[in-house]
Length: 163
Image (cartoon, rainbow, N blue to C red):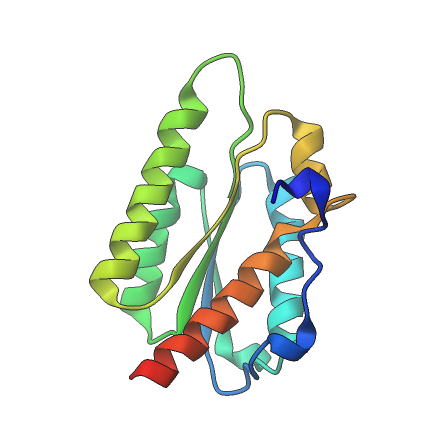
């Protein structure tokens, strides 16, 4: 469903596993930080709300969205995590740069997820306008950081169940 038809922060808390025994890494793009930092706040608050301890959340920053996959790999190499959330924002501009960056990030995180056998979550906003980004980073459409955190918890739980 398109995010303009629902809030990204709406979910059934009863269906979210306890995250008390999970650890998560979060990689955040510093570019468009007026968007990415609220995504980070939403993600951390959601992880903690579902039991993840603050000391089991490690946050690192990268310059831009393009660096999210390499930052995620470096973070994953530094410690053992049940999932790594990658948060960024690429706003469409006058050129096609957004297509190249968004595709590279999506492919990079998919490759990491498959190769490393753990979830690397795509929390990259890909809006056409800055207002659309604001609306999805705590604005009228909720917070994509919340959605990514819920997906991280559910994927970490699935991996644990199947291992």
